[in-house]
Amino acid sequence: MSEDWHSVTLKIPFASEKHALIAKQTIEVDPELQPHAVKRIITVEENVLIAAFSTLTIRLARLVANAFLENVDLVVRTLEQFGEEAENPPSS
Amino acid sequence: MPGKIRKTPLMEAGRDYLALGLEGSANKFGAGIMKHPKDGAATVLSNIRHTYITPPGEGFQPRDTALHHREWALKIINDCLAKAGVSMHEIDCICFTKGPGMGAPLQSVALIARTLSLLFNKPLVGVNHCVGHIEMGREITGAQNPVVLYVSGGNTQVIAYSRQCYRIFGETLDIAVGNCLDRFARIINLSNDPSPGYNIEQEAKKGKRLVSLPYATKGMDVSLSGILSAVEAYTLDKRLHEEGAEDKDLITPQDLCFSLQETVFAMLVEITERAMAHIGSKEVLIVGGVGSNERLQQMMGIMAHERQGQVFATDERFCIDNGIMIAQAGLLSYRMGYETPLAKSTCTQRFRTDEVHVAWRN
Image (tube, rainbow over all chains, first blue to last red; front, side, top):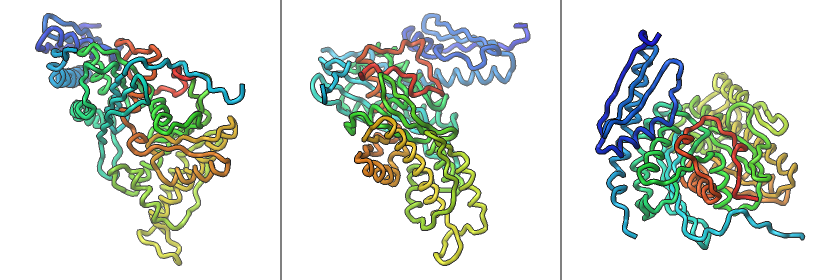
């Protein structure tokens, strides 16, 4: 019964739509570890990354939200470190 | 035609190739940049690593290890590019460890690899960690067709190459030899700095007495968990004493380190010798973290010389987990046309060495 499930939606703005799409494509590759208890939909609207989770238990809601945010943090830091260099290819 | 050298399927490079390799399957994060020049031998441009060292008596857990990698990876990758004097734009492919190893640390590295791949529009190459060790060992030592002893904290295998596959001739039936040594180091509270295995090796040099331990080769394989239990039992023995005098019936932790090494290394030498006899090889290549143990190299050397053969080993830059071996194995695959699509760039804790199609060799 999906009405008994818990839902968490996270919206994270990025510097650009390109970066938000990179985050989506990077994070969505790994499947959820408990697909029968966690449903996940990741989308991008303009420069905003949106992750909507439905979970069977509150504990799972906390775990998936936490894991997702940790992954977003890693992607954001990588984009921060290398983003500028990527925009400026050396002229050959 | 006797003595004919078969040409490798790997074509001449034709141009310079550059690969970035990222490794994080256990407690070391490594990044390396490998160059395959259009003419000439492969060159290591940079190889930087940071190890997550836990306090004495503690092992490393997946979550903390993943946090360590997430904390250190970006700085190490940056340092690696700076040392090599290349930019991400010049890299041809981004190689990362697909497996085997610990789940969360592997995934942390894969996330970074994917982000870089999308940001700079570079292909990804997923690499088998064991094949990485083997290819780096071959490259550094120049061994032609050795029996490979791959021994580390996570793996213990005897491997020989045949028809585009690294075939496993013998392996541990339970735990890896490095795991056995590391867990014993924790039991006797040795420091994990620089690594528990290194400290066991130093303590073993001070050991004087060989205590009786089970010797557990099983045909071509070995079993190590029983030996760990046995040596652990000695630590509860009444005769255990910090400083033993030779005339008294006392056992020191140094004696136990010595006995453990002598026993497990003799077993490894035996199963390696079996593989050598089976395929008629005269070369042994030792790879993996435990391969940096000088006593193991010495014992293997004695066996190899008796068979008119020789032992190849690399130093700790390449023996212990590192990024350059991933770059090397990844670049060889890439040059044969192999790439990992984004959707398939997941990581896996179990990835057998013989699952890889070794397209770059005959």
